[in-house]
Image (cartoon, rainbow, N blue to C red):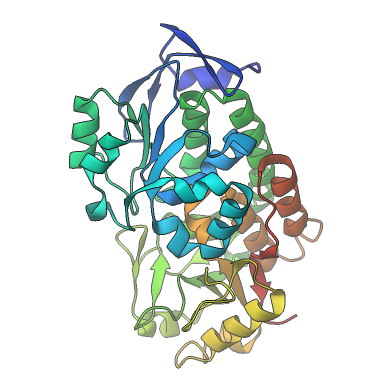
Length: 377
């Protein structure tokens, strides 16, 4: 086991009560405080893990690497429907991923506590918000009654605040502390490079930005982020999110008229559809070519109301991978937004090189695709 930095111990309260082996690592029981504020005892040996959302696999990948599916016995099905191309690539690399039991489809109300308990987990990892069961759910009560530890993490509500804490918690409960510390050193160094330069930038030099999430995939515009989620990426990258004062929560809908009235300097549309998907929406992510991504973005921009925005007519429109909104890879979104908003200030920053480093150093699945694009080449 690698040396654990001192900062970890501010999060961890527990000490050794037993020993075990996990993927070749000597492990010990720990006590953690999770993102729901709960104190949870973690056994030394964690061998059967349940994921409350399938897309938590993004967070486990830098920690488990080639052992990614050795311990996952159950997950929700939203990963395969919301990011089909990535799911297919993970199955191609880890065939046993196709055999992981489904505990629900895409929402918390579809998760069956009985099905989860039948899998005999010794750890459940859930999220504080999103598609999975929450802290007050029946599933959590039944798992705790069965003495199965449950930990909550967050990459969605307040991602730039909670990604570090969540990865530290996962590193501890999976007994992958060294791997988590390595990933967070990469993550924090790239985030600091952006935030240090933005810190002294006057508000008057920060462009107004509107991000349309799952653009054109809903009956009406405009699904977006407020204070948190993708909105946090905009602010960190030196933009002013026009939806922040309009939404009570971190994700919601605003009227198209509000967007037209604000007439933002920058328009960003996100999506996650693949090359084989049908219907409107931005094609983005694994297996998507730059040409396909740009063509789909241009179609989204042709809609009434959106097409007349100054950002669209002036060429300050961009597309981005939707799944950054719930992933520890969110540093890539921050970095590319900073370059879009302030090209002169970040002329030396290459988000594509950062993505290459992320994949080469931390991820067990090589993913070729397009994760952001400009409307203009």
